[in-house]
Each structure stands twice: as structure tokens, then as C-alpha cells.
Image (cartoon, rainbow, N blue to C red; front, top):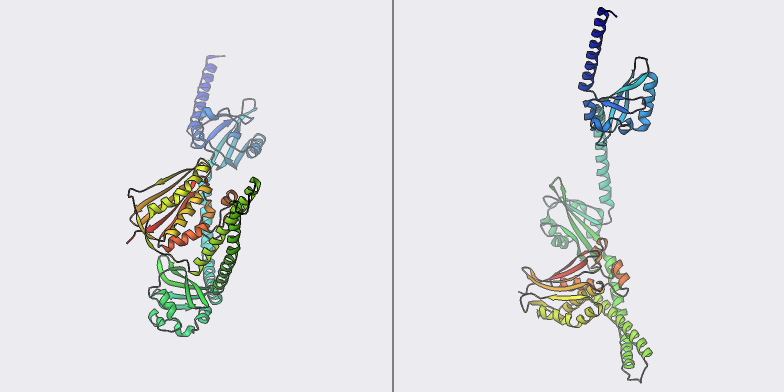
Length: 505
């Protein structure tokens, strides 16, 4: 080869080197994510833009399969088309960067061949369509909203009209009596049931003020009950006549914080009250009739146990003792039912007098301590600093409440557990707490704890015997004293019952 040919060859080699460097620079500085992939789908090289969009460093992605960032079922057909056709122009594929968050992309490929024309791999580049897709979806949404705005407006008007008609139909056919007073306390709406109950004519009372309604004989008692300000009420009893009793609720109607007025709802509970009264009378009569023979059985059993009717052997004594205990439970249940009847008849009167609640608690605790020891439950009485705390109370009935709370704590606290009774003097009065580490009360059952005859599911499993009246009567006794009773409980962590009595004036 001559010197001239060698010079031309050297020049061509320099041009080729420069071209390769140019291609490499173009590959490196391209804003489009590009990678070079082998025919079998292994990533051989990536540019910085691909590193950025994928989140993978070059050393993390090179040598990995394309299936690392694409779904196999999507990238497979694309590779097959690339190797078959030599290119793919703009096919949508889901791309999964290192973060795992899916990106919608448009993929372009071109095969790369060697000097013999053999395919040595292919270039793959991406175009992120996420922003375009988002904008496109937003434009479609806005377009749909604009196209439907007139239709929506008409639909809203039609629905408003329907709702108005429905509301009017509900008011007209509602079985409860309804009065609606506007924000100026003028009667704006009255339904037929209210007209019927109070024997009034809608035309004569609609638009009238509270003052004028108060002067009407048929509405005088109701307006007296509601008061001139018509404050909110929740299910408060109102007696229109001896055989006509209503539960009254007053609801303040608001829209966007604006005062619209007050809705008064009167639900007729006359029949329910009559049935309740009959049930109470039946319970009272039955309990009285049962108590006499049970008392006779009790004294007969005591005579047998005491040997007044002759000696008995151990087996006989055991059977008689169990019978005596069962009879005692029956007498206790009868007494609870009688007390329940007295409460519901309003005859469970309290005899209030000054009482030292510290001594009262001690008188309940002393006979109960043996029961705590026998079961292996640790009991403590946390007394206040004062040696004596005076409250105005019915001592016997208050003892029943404290005894009930202690008995429940003992029943539902396992061996090795803890029960404490504590007294505190607060501004609002005297607070007594009975805290245990027992089974607790499930949240779904807590609303019914003070209901008559209610016992929790867990309580029934642990102690089948029980009337479910103890806490109901405790609530009535404490509220009869002008006090408050409540509790806090978590399943498996225990329960704290408390009551607060007002300070002695």
C-alpha cells in the first residue's frame, strides 16, 4: 500500500473515531431516555436520561432483562416486532421505574447491525405520556362538564321540584304531629296530624306568633311546654290529656350556619305508655303474690337446716342449703321486680337526710371483704383526707347502689385481679369510683348498660344468674339524688363505674 492510500485510510479512521464519539455524545446527552438492548432482551447500556426516568443507576440496570421495567406480556410482542421489522414507532407500554409507580410511555425501537448485516441488538427510547394523558383527561372532563352544564342545571331544577313535592308529601302524611316555626318564631308549617291532635285549623294558626298561639286554648299547654324561646328538646314527655301522651323533640334547622327555624315533632306514645303501665302493674301484682309463698319456703328451710324439726344428715343438709340459696335468689329477684315497679310508678321515694358517705362505704365494705378474700381478688378502699364527708342522701338506697357496684366488680374480676373503691371531693360534689381489672364491656354493648333487664354477653357466660336490674335501679337512685352516674370500660382491661352526688348545701 502506498503512502497516499495509507494517508486516506488514516483519515477515514479518524473520521470514524470522531463519528463514534459524536454518536456516543448524542446518546449520552439526549434528553430522551435511551438504552441499548441485546437481541435476547438484556440491557447493555443506558443514557443518563434513562437512568433518571427509571430511577436505576447504570450498574443496577445494565445486565438486567427489560422485564425488570416492563410487563412481560407487553414487552415480548414489542421485541418480536422489532427483530422482525427492524423498528417499532410509538407503541404505548406501561413502564415501571424503581419506585414501582406505573408510567404510561410511548416506545420507539431501531435494530443495530454489524458490518455483516447481523442484528447485534436494538436501541429503545421512551416518551413519557403521563402529563399528556393527564392533560387529555382533564380536557375531556372539562368538555363533558361544559356540554352537560345546561342539562345538569335543568336536572337540578327538576330534582329540586321533586324534592319539594316529596317533602310536602312526607309532611302531609307523617304520622307524627309537626309544627315548623320560622326564625321569627312564627308558625310556618303545620301538618294534618297536628291539626287532628290539637283540634285546630291550619288556616287560623299559620303565620301567627308564639304570643298569639299561647292565647289559644287548644295550643296553650303546648306553647307553655315549649317556652317562648323554643329551645332544643330531645324526646321529652308532654301530656296533652290523661290518655294522650307525646314524646316531643325540637330540632333547630340550619343551612350553611344560617338559622332557618325550629321543627317540633310530637310522637304519640299513649298506647306504649298504657301497655307499659299494664306491664308494671302485672309485675307488681305477680311479685307480691310470689313473695308470700317464697318467704314461707325460706322459714321452713331454715327450720329444717337449724334442726328444729329433727336431725338431718350431711347430704340432706347440702341439698337443703342449695335449695335455700336458690330460694334466696328468687326472693332477691322478686324484690328487684318490686323496686322496678315502684320506680316506674313513681313510688320509689327517697328519704333524704345528712349521711357520712365514708362510714356508709365502710358499712358496705366490711361484710364484703371476706368474699374478695375467698375469690383471691385484691380489694382496696382509697379514703379521702377528710375523716367524714356529709351528703344529703337516702342511706339505705345509696348502700344498694354501692353494694351493686362492688358485687359486679367481684363477679367479673378473675382470681388475682384488683378492685378498688375510692372517694374524692370535687367542686361539683362527692365522686365515688369502683374500679376493677375484670372482663370489661364491649363497645357495641355499652349504650345499653343502664337499661333494665340488660346483661352483656360476657357477663351472662360468667354468671348466668342475674336479673339485669341492678344498674338500672342504681341509675334511678343516683339521678333521684340529683347526681350523675357513668362508667368507662375496655374489653380485657377492666371497668370503672362512678357516681357523683351534689355537695350538701
